[in-house]
Image (cartoon, rainbow, N blue to C red; front, side, top):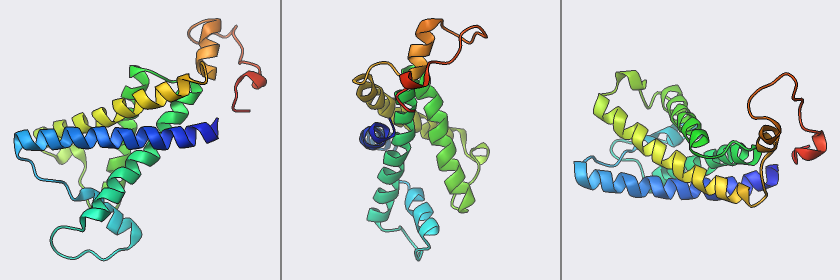
Length: 177
């Protein structure tokens, strides 16, 4: 399961990153909002790279933007492999994507807590991260579905919900043993 989740997640996350970027470019054309240099500044801090005045190098921005998208896609793929699929799983993953950004941005001193942001800026960020999460989820779910239902889905097929009288699946049926 982990091997599948790794390659499928990298693919799904990269696709999600591309879809998010297209959405961002459309939004920027409509609103006039400039490009964000936060991803580059975070990567510069994390990697101990020098930070000069002005805009950071575009390649550094792209490496962080797409690298983060691809790596987080692996987590969404693990969710899909386990049987956490569909819009509800993608909504949960949206929170993970937002949380990941905020941890990195705030821990490096590059960003500020979202509660301090102008509401319009916050709405735009949440929207773009949701687009990423749902696009990544659609790809991860489709790739995982090729292997059949995940362990969680097979368990739910026994009797949906949590019930004390329904034990776990046999280990051999979880594919992750």
